[in-house]
Structures are given as C-alpha cells and as structure tokens.
Length: 225
Ligand code: CA
Image 1 (cartoon, rainbow, N blue to C red):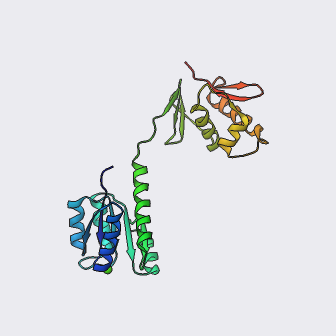
Image 2: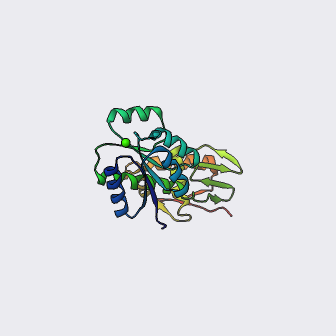
Image 3: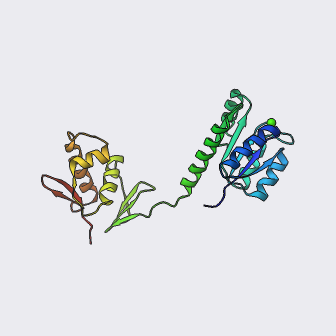
C-alpha cells in the first residue's frame, strides 16, 4: 500500500509537533501548516489523504480552511477543538468535518481516530461486487435491488438477505436450521416455519422454480439455464 499523507494544521507548535511525531511513528508522511492560507496551499500541493485541522488559526480559521479544501477535493477531516461547546457549535454548522477531538486529547486517541477515518474512506472506495445473474433475475447487492426481466421486484429486507444467501451457494442444499441461524441469526431451530414462509414469498415474486425444496432437509437455489 502506498504511504498515506496527513496534513496537520495547527499554529500551536508543541501540539503540531507532537501530533506529527505520533502520526509519523504510525507510518504516515506528515506535513505541518501553521495558518489558514498555508494550509490551503499545502493541501493543493501535497495532496494529503487526511487533514487534522485546528479551529483557531491565524489568517483564517479552521472552518474556512475546511470549506476551501473540501471544495478542491473531498477528504476526511479530523477537527481539533478547544472546548466541548465549540465542538457542539461546529457539529451544528455542519462544516464538513468527519470527526472532532477536544483538547487536550491523547496522541493514542488521535491516532485511533485517524485510522478509523481512513478505513472508512478506503472501504467506501472499494468497488461494489458485480450483480448476480440467475437467468432473467439480477441481484444487485450494493443497491439491495432485485430485477426480474428488467423490472424491479420488491423484496422485504429479510427476503433479500435470504435470496443473497441462497444465491451465494447455488445448487447447494442448505438445511432450514442453518438458514435460520445464518440469515435470521437464530441459534435454535424452532423457527423453521419462518424460513418456509420466506421461501414461499420468494417463489411467488421470482418464480416457482428458483428454489427447490429438499424434503426433510431444506432448500437449494437452482440456476436457471
Ligand atoms: Ca490554534
């Protein structure tokens, strides 16, 4: 993985240096900016993956920095605030920061927040899995949509989860107890009639032949030719 860059914007030098040192120890490449205008400038030239941004800054404040950099390119921003009430105010203003940390904070907490924000962004950037096709049925997991012959089919959330579960193991006989555990999260098998009624609904909406009953055992999804 390429080295990730963090821009630390903070005019209090001791805080800036401590934050930078901790993040460098975590493997990040770190730049420091000490006022509003240079923060925006360094954001443009350094192309950081994340910005740690103090609110009170010379030049113009962190809110303005946040607005200007978000207009250039969306990036996760961890804002440093002086007091809890300042954080409340900023949350109310919806300035576009992704998280807030009130001073004084521990470097351990700061590093943890930075990792969480970057993981969230990286997960969001992961391409969605391709749609599953079963004959004329198309299952789009990312959008939680199902189409049959090009027309949207409305499934309840549980019906959708059951269908995706069956479609993930086509032609495999899945016992009702196991479906109950995996889809409904029920450990004991006393609700297997629930599985039956959901299978019935899926057959009604998507075709009677899609799911085969294996008597006394469970169900298997058939792949239409
Ligand atoms: Ca400051």
